[in-house]
Amino acid sequence: MTCMHALAEMLRQLYAARQGRAAEVLMDRCSREALEKLVRESSAFLGARVLYAVEDRLRHRKPQLDEAALPTIRAIASVLNAWLHDGRRLAIRAVLRELGEDELRELASLPELNDEVATMTGDFAGGNAP
Image (cartoon, rainbow, N blue to C red; front, side):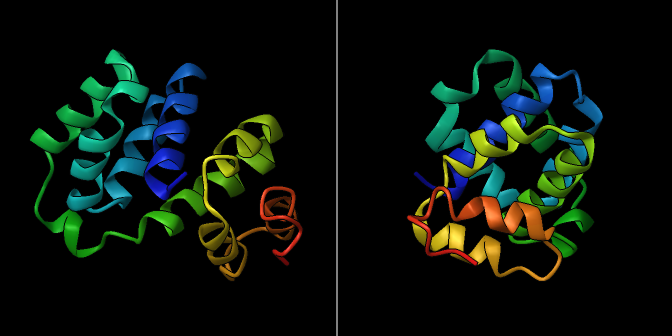
């Protein structure tokens, strides 16, 4: 379980919910390196539709996006907060399930993460997250 698996699950969830624009924003917030790693490591899990979208986004990516790219865990946090606001707790849990314990602790410690989402991380980190 890694951050790449969580990113793959998040993109899959976004496209399944017909939130393509949110998926594009998420990909733009991630570094080119992270997206290339996602394609290499998680292409079987992504499915053809999402894999095509990621590859297309990489093909048309503007160089200045990498200057403003966030660490993958921070990009994921912004979507988790939006999902909480929209009441998509099952989607949040599906993404959290893909993170390792260290990543869950890192996510829970982010100041911008909603307190309720931070609390949910404890369900997957053996209760060690805040």
